[in-house]
Image (cartoon, rainbow, N blue to C red; front, side):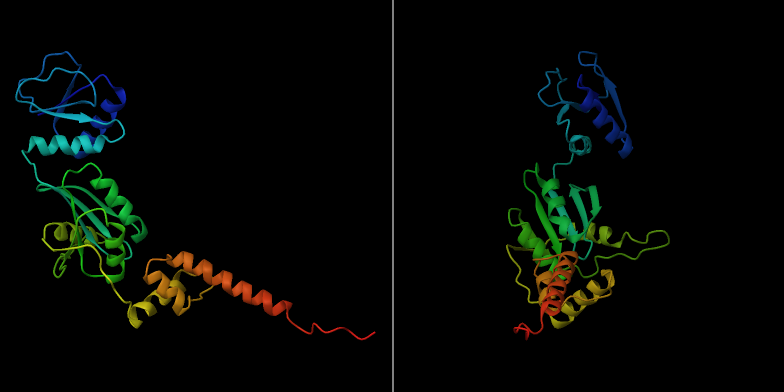
Length: 262
């Protein structure tokens, strides 16, 4: 059983809330109280001096990161010591799954521009993390590889990783695919050079028209910038509007600059 024993209210509140959200069995005691005989894992505040019984696993919780402490406590309770693996199903809104040992400890679906930040946050304290990225959605995947240059990355054949989604599971496909990708070994890579195809550029232009307030698509040059990660579609649209407004202003200011006759 997990036992929370801390005088730090912030740690206590954060850890207990996370444990309840996870449906984990636990109890709490005051530091110095007698420990329950069934104690397997003790959670205290980082730096706190609490005497722990022999044979009990110790987890020290950062008040800013109670979820990490709970994940560590549950892993210790299950006797798991596997590495942290992050699986990513790339796309416009990538699915991201964090796996520790045999457990999925976190899952996300975020805009592509935010995926690398999420991954960095999730592996920050991990001793030996690896990120596994599906080989689909090549342009997004290549940008993620570049953005995660400080983390070991593997490229995974994602064929068959998206499961059949039954009734009520709509919208979960990318996250479940990310879980499957995390469980497959891939080829370790440090970069992935991808030249966008004409079809990929056209899809970016079509997407820009869909999100544009004026039903206008960005041009091919800006579409390439989006494909290469220089701009998001929204930023490219703003750049496109600025260029159009500038051209319109120049045209309105044009005309006969010659001297008028007296």
